[in-house]
Image (cartoon, rainbow, N blue to C red; front, top):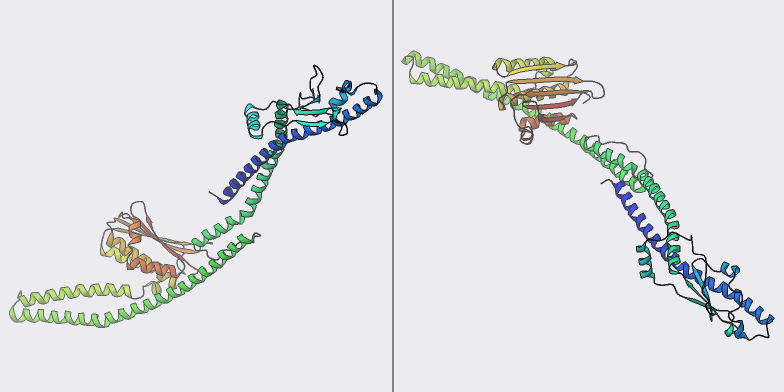
Length: 456
């Protein structure tokens, strides 16, 4: 899962938790606000009745105080205006047939769900009754007793939650959206860093990265850049060492070719001469067909085979004709030499592009790749047709493509894993020039392709 999505998902979880906490807090606050409204209503009504009580007491002093209770005309519109919605107030001691005076509770809110009413009442309990004396100086003036209507209180709490939850929900959505955009913008450079790592995996080690404002991502970018520089430096050092190794190997091959030619070649020539002499002498002295003549003839034949094998080995050890004839001519000569040895398989040579100016190390490497791949295809497969394709690619690629395809079947993965000294050697040669060698499945066999940069 992408990091941006993970952070956004966690942010949404946090927003949901905060929204739930805000809902719980709003429920408790709305429910407790009813208690505050009850206390405030009792306080306001008691103050109003205190003034009414003393006025009646002064104007009607000839009457007994018991006759003033409850105070006359206290159930008025003015008194109802002092009572909060959903709150009921009762005068104590109450008169005969006197009912509590309640504030307007109709239209104060929508009817809440039953589960909400049951949950709130179970968790928060009933509302407390609030009592206020009408006069602190006259205890006999009576008492105002206020209590909340349970249904009205629940409806008020529900309406309060609905009013607040809409605002909270809009704020949560806005915060989630803006924070998601901010997170996506902040982590956008991570895509560039990942792309740079992928290019580094493909061999483009020195990959520039854009400037990043985030300190952490900037540190990662610098670490990636430093890693790319070190990899590029290591690759350059490896290329230099590989080229030096190839030069040393070439020197050793030439020295070995000289030793084989000077020592083995001369000795084999001498053995062949001795064998011919023995055969001729034995035939003159003892008559043709003697055992000595036959043995000498067999020695001559074996020596000729060894000399032919030695010549083939010397041709492979010495520098290829690409240095002298040029790449195109040397490839034509290579294909003609294989064609002359056997009629099967059929070898096709496909040259594309201008190869005249390709020389030096690139030409030698291309020739070695073609030589080794043709040798493997002829010796280790039952191919009927082999195609050697040399293509010069210009433009930004500016490389030479050497591809050998056969129809002899085979498993590309196994061949790549069990590559012998020949393929390993040409792979090292190609890598030393900054190229690549690949072994893949063709339509009816295997395809070995080498890409050699011409700027090498």
